[in-house]
Amino acid sequence: MPLKFQFQFAGADFSRPSSPYRKWLRIGLVSLMSVLVVLVYLEYLHHLLHGQQLALPHFPHLVHSTPAVPPATAPTATTPDSAKPTAPDAPSALPSLKKIADYSVLAAASLVANAVKMIPTAVPAVRSEPTAKPVNIATAAPVVARVQKPVMTHPFRVRTEQERLYLAGQTAFANVIELADKYPDAYGFQAEDFLSDAKLGAAIPVYTIAESDRANYQAGQPVKSLLKPARQWVFPVMMGERICCMVEVRQAGHDFIPGTGNRSLGMAWGKIMEKWPVAAGYHPMLLVNPGIPGYYFTVPELPNPNITDTVQMFYFHPGTSPAEVILASWR
Image 1 (cartoon, rainbow, N blue to C red):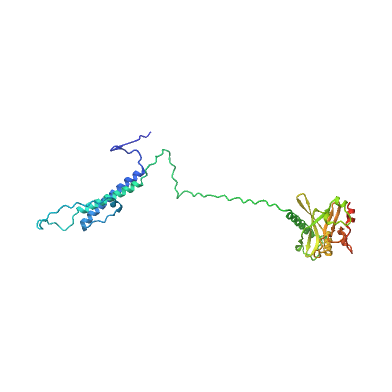
Image 2 (image 1 turned 180 degrees about the vertical axis):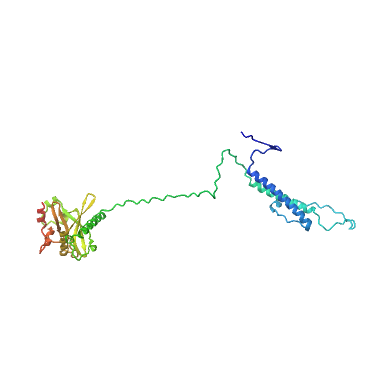
């Protein structure tokens, strides 16, 4: 075990580490005394060489703080000029040394006061715990703070029924165009038609009549008030102003299921719109009977209630059928 050497000098124990504030105070006092000695020596040399005083720093805050006491003037006795001792013209060094001493005392007092102000009133106790090793900032690796980007969550977009219906119609339209590339005539396209010019028209709703309303129908009763949505739609496939065919869409629960293309229905609907155009105030409507295949139509604006099979539009003289006749055949 190493021996702990201690020595004392003038009753002071130097084995105990001194405070850093006292250390700097001692260094300041030693430096001040060295400066004062150099200033006194320079003043003395200057006096010997030039006979003038060295300009020393002025401390007004310390000079004003100590009231100056005027020197007492002693009465001078009149002596004849012949009795006065003769002396050389060189100025006396005693007043200069006195001023230097005064300035030195003032400078020392100012430095001591500033050093005392820098010493804190309470010196923190030195802990016996080991201090952390200082880190060299110049060589230490920079710490890069990475800010995590917020995750952009896209809310799930709920489509409306009209949007889902139109998407199903687009799917059915794409299927028809793919088949029409091989069999154009089966879907109403002509040899000079470009399939890229085909467009999908607006959805046409399909209606039906409930079985109870069909059983209780009276002749002359308006048909439009009996129509109920059949949850089916047809989209016309247009080539300019001409209807080539119809694509079907039906609803099953919340789903819209695209169907196949129907050339005959497209041709029949084109003849219906020519005979009873919307510009003339007519609004034809499509009907179906779930138990009978095919499509029917009615024109509510005609004077007689009517329900007609779309096949009649291919006759030479197409016309309408009375509503009571068709509804009786549906019973």
